[in-house]
Image (cartoon, rainbow, N blue to C red; front, side, top):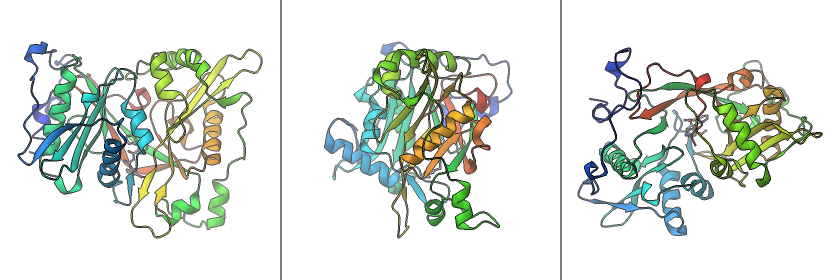
Length: 379
Ligand SMILES: COc1cccc(CC(=N)NC(=O)c2cccnc2OC2CCNCC2)c1
């Protein structure tokens, strides 16, 4: 009964795989507002629901500390995602967000925050489900997923997208992640990478060396006045994918304008016509290094949305690597989504040791989506 909970949910079930008689689209019809459970689900006795107001410094710090100590680790438990407070405020407050979708669980007696789940509307997606390490297998996650779903239903929204490193019923796509060393000495020292066979450290450093500055004429940081043009470029590009966000100018302003320590975005504007022909971006997600005497944090950049219509994607992404190195990132991570496959090997990315599975809630698609057909990057 590994998936006892997920077998009760409107998600693609393993036993349905290949059943082409089932229609594509919503699995359950929308409910009338009066049919949605009006009161919160019951928690085990010792716990209580709390709506997390992440605008408050104190509450944001509680959420930050819970995630820093209990959120996702790599398969070998050597690293743990360490989302910063400014990143969390950015990720959880996009246009049209609902405070009521930032849901925590406290211990009634101590008031300690021990679990957290969120949703954000970007034509909807769910992110950040975390349960304190000591409360795992207490079956808290299912009731938390039901509660955030209930609160999303109250806003008349019926679908969601989410990712997980674990296989649940049923992935719509399974992506491979890749890493490009920027600071190979540190990555080897902390055990993220291993020295290649017949390779010395100095040979490895030389292998990953990058130019001091970007090579594409007209390559510059995105600025507020670029939002309309970048929105047009991005909407056109993303329309080709089976699953992709439907960004408007407000979304682009929030999700893609540079924000220090959170997200970096660049574009190529033709020096003659000033037309914007290309775009690249990455977000900042450091990881805590668990148990290393010399280093505590791995500074990682994650490939976000990239569009190339004139500059070859290979050259555009190499400029992204150059800027990431200038900003002192240790590693540049990417999934094999969109057209990333076309540059990964050539730019010296190595395959990671795991997969990232994409899921849709209450939406059936007839056949799985290839990573190259996925135009959605979750944080
Ligand atoms: C290096 O520190 C880590 C700390 C925790 C987990 C992992 C491995 C891992 N699970 N990596 C990814 O999921 C990943 C690898 C490349 C690009 N994006 C990724 O995940 C994104 C998107 C999903 N939410 C987390 C960040 C690595």
